[in-house]
Amino acid sequence: MRNRIQNNLDTIAKQSIFRLICFFLFFTVKNIYAQTTVMPEYNLNKDILGSVYKFSFVHITDIHIGEGISDYGTQGFFNDTMPSVDNSKPARALREAVKWINFHEQDKNIKFVVISGDLTGSAEKSEFKMVKKIMSDLKLPYVPVIGNHDAWPYVRYQTEASTACGDSIMNEVFDSVYTADKTFFANWNDGTRLTRVYNPESDQYHYLQNFSFEYENFIFYSLDFNPRYHVNKPEPGIGPEAQLMDWQGGTFQWLKNEMATNTRKRNKNVCFISHHPATNNPLFILSGFVFDMNEYNKLTSMLNPYKNNLGLWMTGHIHIDYDYQLAYNNNGIMAVRGMEANKDHDSSRFQIVNVYEVPTITDISKQKLNKPIKLYPNPNDGKFTIAEELFSPNAMLKLYDVVGNLISEKEMRSFATMNETYQFDFSYLPKGLYYLVLTDETNSYSQRLMMQ
Image (cartoon, rainbow, N blue to C red; front, side):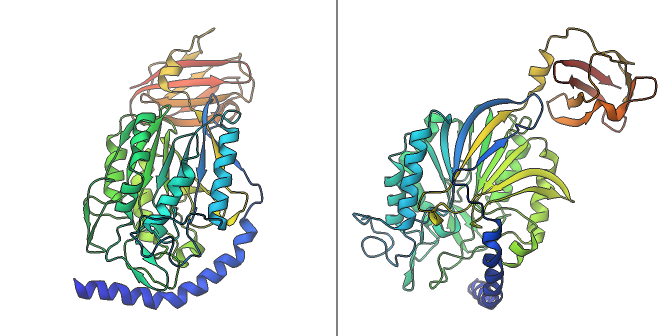
C-alpha cells in the first residue's frame, strides 16, 4: 500500500510541469469568457412551454476564506480561534453577498442559498468557522458543499494534517446549519455525509459529502468528487482534478443508486451541486481541472437514461462563468452552469436561479378540453393522424410517457400534409399509454394516446 501511495505521489510530481503550462494557457483565456455582470440570473426550465415560475435561490461558489494567509487565526489547522477581524478580499466579498441577498430576499423571491465548494483557502477549522460566522447574518437557509480546498487541512508552506479530514471538520462546524436545513427542506437525506467510508485511492476513511434535499418538488443532490491525496504545500489546496469515487460507498455508486430508486423524479426537476464540473472540454481536461475522459464517459452513460429528469448542474472551481450542455455521445442531457469565484470580486459574485416547474402528467390529464383533438385511430400502433383546425401553424406538439417524461416536442407544421392533416409515426416507441399536448398562443389541449 505504501508503494502505491508513493507511486501516486510520483505521478503527481511528474504532472506538475505539464499542469503549470496548461494553467498558464487556461488563465490566459480566462478573462475572455468572464462576464462583468455582478448578479447574473439563470432561468431553469423557463423556455419549456407550459412551465410555471415557482421560486428563486442563489448559487455562490469559491469563497476561499483565509486565502493568502499562511496560518489563519491561532496557530495550527485544528485551532478553534478565528481572527478577531478579517478585512481580506474573500471575507469582504462574502459579507457583501450576504448583505445583497438579505436586501433582495423578497423582491427577488429568494428562498435559500447553495455554496458549491471551496469555502476555505486551506481547510483550517478557523476558516470554516469564519465562513459560518459571516453566513450567520444571512436571513435565509444555506447549504455548504465541499470543494478541493476544503478537503485536507494544512498551513501553507509549513505542514499538513495527518489525514484528509476536512470533511469531518465541515460536519462538526456546520452541524447546526445542516440541522436547520433538515427542518426547512423536504426529504432531507444525509446520504454518505455522516458515514465514514474507506477510500481505496487514498487508503483512508472519509465522510464523503454526498447528500440530497428537496424544495417545491425539485430534488437537489450535493456531490463530492474531491480527491483526498496529500497537499502540495506551496500551492493553494490539493490537486484540482475530479475523481468519480467509483467504489463501494463512493460518490458514483451512491448517485447511481439514487437516480435508479428516487421515485420523485419528474420532468427537469433534478439538480446537481458540486465543486467540480463534468465536461469533455479538452482545455479543462489537459489542465487537470475535471474528470478524465474515461470517468466522464462512465458518468454521462449512467445519467443518459434520466436526461428527461435532469434540470441543472451548478458548479464552480474553474473561476469563470460558463454554460454548456453535459453530453453523452454528442447528445445533450443536462444544462451545466458554472460560476466565477465570489472571492475575485470586492462587490461579490453569484447568480440567482429562477426555477420554473414543467407540467406533469397529472397536470396534463386534469386539463379541460373545450374540443377533443381529432386523432385517429386511437388505439394505434404508433402511427396516427390529427385533423385539427383550431391551432395556428406554429402550434407545438408534446408527447409524454405515462410517468411524465417528455418524449418529443416539435412544431405541428413539421408533420403537415397536403390535405391539411398531420401524420405522425411514433411506432419506434414502446407500447403503452402516452399523452399528447397541443399548444399555441391561445389554446392548450391534451389527449390520451394508446399504442398497442
